[in-house]
Amino acid sequence: QVQLVESGGGLVQAGGSLRLSCAASGRTFSLYAMGWFRQGVGKEREFVAAINWSGSMTSYADPVKGQFTISRDNVKNMVYLQMNSLKPEDTAVYYCAAERSMSTVRPAKYDYWGQGTQVTVSS
Image (tube, rainbow, N blue to C red; front, side):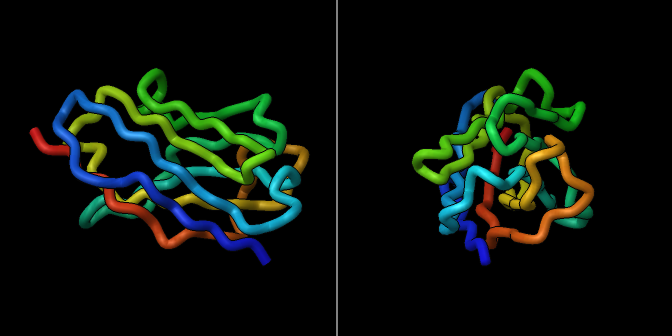
């Protein structure tokens, strides 16, 4: 069982930055691939970014490449999403996800999900 808790969401003006954090409860956090997803109003949940177990490999959705950065700290059991140059279309609930895997940066599925944190970007 892995519990994930997101934080760091809030209100920000277009062009601003936010850093989201995801805290994991498990002792074997370093064995998990981690990901960030988001869901805007009236939209389906979409992939944002992923990072492998060691943090040596990352993957991003095309719309956020060069804008967002995913990272992790396996000592603190934390994963982060640094979001820069935010746009109104980035407004969404952002979710942290985990899957036990040491073989891929982006698993086909994730078994564990956080409750989400709201990010709102004003124009």
